[in-house]
Image (cartoon, rainbow, N blue to C red; front, side, top):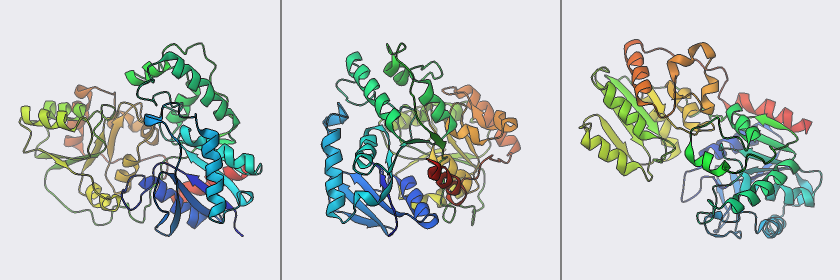
Length: 397
């Protein structure tokens, strides 16, 4: 019997969503490249299902609205997980790894390890905020609420066997907590306000696993020729992603880029502001807003671009950068983003810009339009290359 690799994530494609494509790509590669029996658990109600041959278990859980007091029902939810696994014929004694994604789900990994001390409990960090201090819409500005969860999550982090970070920037931000001086993102600084006297995290082991790509689908094959300069972006429209900086930069450089177009895919709270900006600056003939689409259709979009830009102000990595580049499309990102570390130091002035700076981005766009430089990355992005060293690290825990 194969040992079980339990992958617990709130983000996974299913019958009603295609979000969480990274998790699906990771699980498919893990199934292909390892000897584990990989099972996926997603919190939420509904029937179990299969996705590309991967069994997916739905786990109803106890949570307060907006994840206020996110650890309040941790023990209860952990027991519910063990019951759900046994009901499906999965003996916790056969679980070798419990891999939880994002801090609120780390208690599940610890629950599995309590039932089977030989299991390794992992936490995968996908965001620069690894303490859940922004959870709880009503109380997240309360100092006592933040202080309580700072120490609760710090204790959980210390008990886990290993931490997976999607970039070195992700790991540095985690280890720097509660210091927030490295970022200008006001939401994160507000989370850490008043906590400067708190001890920094202590963890047993960590590993950098960049967001990999299924290069069987995301590759440059069949890039179509097209006139002019086509720029694109795929991202939720939120203040953090900072689409307005991209639009302002293009407005500044609009007469220096020749025949250019911008294609934006996504939805979210700042979409209307961006649409208003486009109308007020008479960019309707240059900028198109496109609805979200299945992940399987994105390679066609990336291949149709000359340049991908996401000027996110607070980004641990960004799967979209890896996907674009794997399709042969270079990218520009902010210098503090995790994806920036993939670019060789000698080339960073070409591809990196300061966050929230439309003038710097406009200057970079002008240079690109006149030179069309090629982009090289320091790390391979295929899961076939990324996973074997990760599995070796896992064996050392």
